[in-house]
Image (cartoon, rainbow, N blue to C red):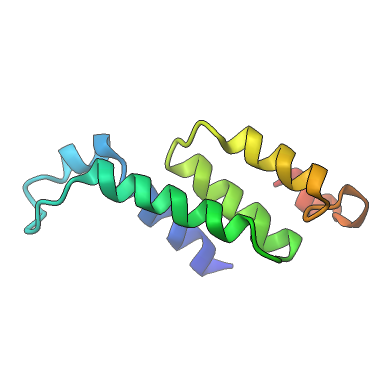
Length: 96
């Protein structure tokens, strides 16, 4: 839904390249690298849970938005563990 898109947009803003561009607007100077690593770990923890295919796919998009290199590994692991079943996915989910 709309909140999923907002979440991805917000995660995109958290990237270092965007933080540099937004530097003048930010009042709190945190280490974006540490925050980004914590966000990636949080997303991976959520992916390991018992979620619907839609929620898993959204979390995969979130990992992609923060340029996490393990995205393909996370998808493969979800497929092999059975938490993401190809038999139960709709055409819309496949296109995501």
